[in-house]
Length: 290
Image (cartoon, rainbow, N blue to C red; front, side, top):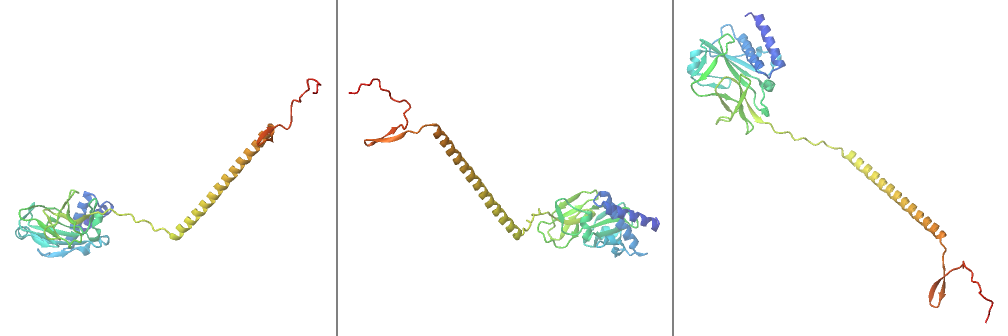
């Protein structure tokens, strides 16, 4: 494969990763792209067992991402394991299909970790680091079977007591586990990408600060409106009562005019009614006067 063809493929993969980095396919393409850049950064005759830094070969939009690569003989990897870039790989790791030499590509996504990997309802508290093993000089990814102990991944000492290890599998799933007896170590049994997470704490809404001056003005305005309202209601009630009383008095006077009023006179110590006008005048039946 020519250099120009490789450059076109790498550019396409990089663009795909940036457009939709959360899918399984894009994550695999990102790993393959790292392998391409790591291979292109090797000297003409790379030495086995030497870790080569390939970070400078990455494009500018991967600033903060660390990339390195080491080439090992298959039998040496089986007998001795490998200890590079914070990954302690024990002996007796069987890599297949068989190739005389293999390349281990190490990556640290740094401040771009959450852009490519995330765990629902959790927050990353460490960068996402990873390793993948390929056949020497090509993109054939090897499978691993561990016959010895687990692979240990070293992280900065966590500042959170509830931190857990998380492994991102190549099929897009993830698995969380407890830290080892050492606070900054995670135990894994396969290649991939790893980090530490803590549960997300629900955010408490911060009440907005109110302007006390404006609040005081509103209180004064409301008080004034309330007082005026009470005065208006009182005035209306007073007017209604006055009208009701005047109406009642007028009605009583009108009723009094319809009826004749009897006068009173004193008879002994008693007060008796006296009609001021006699409707029927008395008549003398005869003219006899005793």
